Structures are given as structure tokens and as C-alpha cells.
Amino acid sequence: MAALRVPNFVRRRSASAYVMDDWESHVRSELALELPDEDIGEDLDDCLDFYRFGSKPRCEEIEYLELVRDARDRIARGRTA
Image (tube, rainbow, N blue to C red):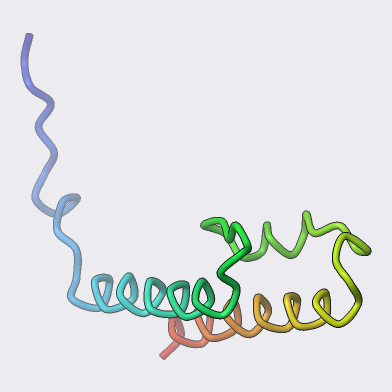
């Protein structure tokens, strides 16, 4: 059985790709510290799309949604920078 060979241009990642991964990880880590009891998934848009309103007390709900939106926006701004 022959091993699959992947061309170098496919395997190589740019330095900016590594910086972006670090930025996303940093923002997600901050969010996890802010919301230690929440199970934050990989896709923050999914967290917002599948959130059930009324599942938390109103003040916690507002804080949760604001923190997740802010983190999502910070990641998006980092991608364009």
C-alpha cells in the first residue's frame, strides 16, 4: 500500500495562519474564563444560533450573549487585520 503524498504547497502554513490560530485560541480562552460554567463550542455563531432564549435568568442571558458576540466580533476583526 502506497503512502499518500501531499505536495509541500498544501502542507505549508503561512506565519499569519499561525498568528490567527493563536488569536482565536486567545479569545476563546478569555471567553472560557469569563463563562466557566458554559460549554462553548468551536463555532461561536453556532452558540448564538442554537441558544434557547429563556434558558437562563434574564441578566445572565444578556451577559452571556454579549460576551459571545463580543468574542465572535474580536475574532472576525483579527482575521481582517
